Length: 344
Image (cartoon, rainbow, N blue to C red; front, side, top):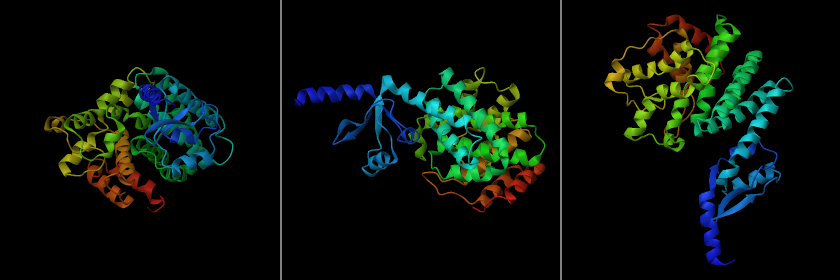
């Protein structure tokens, strides 16, 4: 091939292609469009449109280090639609087979789909579909609450990027605690699960790769501090969550403020909250406390690029320091649930 023509073709591809995750291919039977990779510094088609995506093919790509994948930007929607179709099929067949396997499959797909939402938070159709998929997942989890711990542990093994797995991990723990209290009706638990799951959508304002760096820029730290407000802006009027649940989202960082006072570095928060923010009074109720506590525990017991996972005991001890004085009953409920939990 003529070098000038090749250079022109490569230059054109550089403008036309957009990156995808290899995880997106894990759950598909065939490719809805050509998938490109980089070989010897050049874009090459690695998977052809309609080609079967087998385990052997994926193993080969991974073993050869071909994990930076791309598709034509104009055909990106085909991959998203394929994942949505798969999610719909999995959701409809949740009552058939092993509930732990079914839960893992649905949550893996939902996690991939969450990245689509983070990348395009203004797309109403994308957000609404994600909300409905999440609601279906909650119904399944409530119907299979005896398996919640196994589903949680199985999902944690999947090693998704923590930005996309943390919301589900925290919400799974929350559902277990709520169920254990026997104080909440199914509809209440569903609404709180969805509130917990969507509360951090405002973190989408920061590129995901930046979260792998412990040292964020001042601007990124500011965006992180404001992520609860960003979440409200994204969700308000677009998903069926009531004012009280929006208030929980608004205040779910309350214990991050307290963490600053205690010099605890628990979550993603680099302790960059301003003194004015720290001084602002925050009203916190039982539901907010439980959501915050599960967020802290889920974050601590899973690793981050800059730190290993903590023991469950250490996470519970920090929650004790943060809430036991003002919310002693809530802390007892949390401890009661985790007493029967598998040792970390």
